Image (cartoon, rainbow, N blue to C red; front, side, top):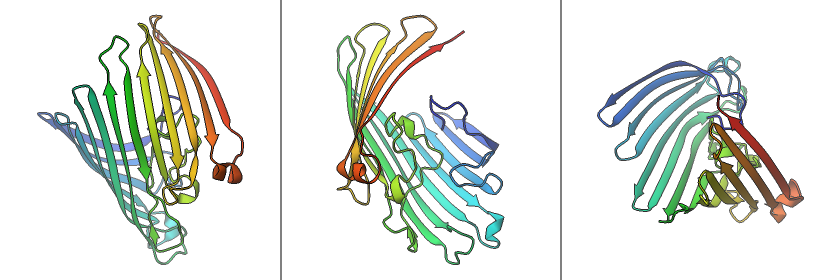
Length: 275
C-alpha cells in the first residue's frame, strides 16, 4: 500500500466482496491495476484473491493468484503465480509479537521468446517481539527480522527471489529508502535485522529510534550497511502534528566498493494540520 510520503496511492478497479460471521471476516476479490507498475501491464495483469481474518485470535490468511496474459507472449502467459500468506499478532502481558510469512509458486517468463517457463519457489517471513515497561513515559523496546529469499542465478530454470508485489519499503526497510526494490540488488533478497525503541517523555511528545542492519539473503555474509532513524513527534497543539526526523546510512565495505562509498545523511520536518 501507499505510505505517508506518497502523493498518490495505487489505483485498482474490480470487485471486493466481504462478509462477517461473529469475529471472522472473509473476503473474495478480483482486481486490475489502472497503471503500469513494477513491470506489470495494467491491461493484461489481473489479481484474484481470497482471505479470512480471525479477529479474536489475531490471525489472518490470504491467497492471491496473479495472471499476466501479455498479448506479446501469444499462447503463453508471462506470469502465473500464487502467493499464500499468513499474519499473526498477539499481546500477552507487557509483551507483543507479530509474525508474517508468505510463499510463492507458479511460473514466469522474462521474454516472449522464452519457450520454457521458470518455476517459482520463493518466500518471505518477518517477526517482531516487543516489550513494554510500566512507567509514565510508556517505554517500549523491540527486536525483529525481515527476510526475503533471493536467487543466485536468474537465468536457471528456477526463480527463488521473492516478489513483494505492491508493498511499501519505506515503512519497513528504513526511512532513507536505500532498498526500495522488491528483490534488492540483482534479485539476491534481503535480511533486515532491526531494533526499535519508543518513549513518551512528556504529554503530546513521542520519541522513536530504529536501527537496521541490512545484508543480502543468498550471500548473508555480504553486509550492505547500517541505518539509524531518529524521530520526534508532537501533538501538543490541537489539530496539528509536528514530525522531526534525522537518519544516517553507513555503507559496508562491499556496498561502498560497488555502489556508493559515502555515508548518507537525511533530515526532515513535517507539519500536518487538520481543518
